[in-house]
Length: 358
Image 1 (cartoon, rainbow, N blue to C red):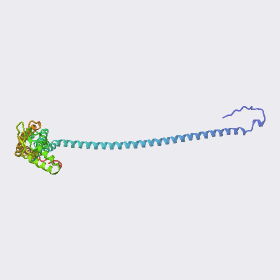
Image 2 (image 1 turned 45 degrees about the vertical axis):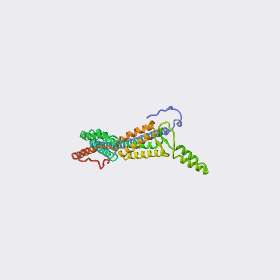
Image 3 (image 1 turned 30 degrees about the vertical axis):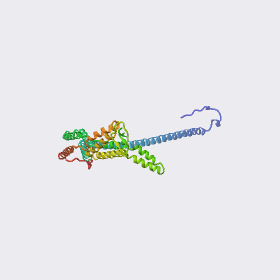
Image 4 (image 1 turned 180 degrees about the vertical axis):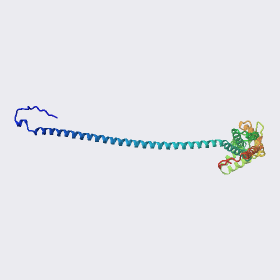
């Protein structure tokens, strides 16, 4: 490489033209500058390469970490899905078992339902027999038998038609019985006892000696021997009483007989009430006959209250307190015969240790 200068080739001093060593020093300086620039360039390139390499390494590490995280997440997802699938399979198996058990229970339900219904019907018939035989309670017995007939009708089993026919026949026989309201009759007698003294006596009934006894009672308040004499004279005059009447007198009651009349009526009403509770028809008729006779003889039969009492007592006299009751045991015997036949054909029902109410 040739360097050109602006200095002239001729002229000048030797110092001005320079020495032979001046040109190489300037070129060396330039070379140093160039070498320094190249070194700096190399250093910059090396630094840039290192940064790029470091970035690449970090990128690879991040990519590896992301890949590993993705792999772990995928593995966890696969495990979760596998667990969910296994649970789903278990649930499906459990649902299938439940459906199978429900179907089995559905197949067994009609028979079990009929067994319980028949046990309930038998219990109702037992109640009806007890109420009828022990308490003569026709109303309650009919209610129990009607409930049993309704349960038989709801079952709809054709094999139970003979049982239902027998039950219907017993119900009809029981309905033919004249039902007696024993409690109502006893309460009516108790009410008569309470309001007996409100019944008016006949217009022709008089109590003898009433005025004289009042005078004697007033005389007892007088003091001394005069009061004693007046009291004695009043008692003497009360022995014989002369009374003037414009019309005939039907009955004459002696002093205090009005009180005893009401007491006798009260006692006879209590006797009639006791006969009703004991279902004693004969004694009731006897008591009612005496009550009717006394009411007609001593009390005002034109009074509405007395007339109503006489009419009610006459109706009670025609009532049979202890009517003949029909035998309703045929219904329960027919049902038990059906149960025995069913056990022989199908065997005893399995009720898991449970028993119907007795």
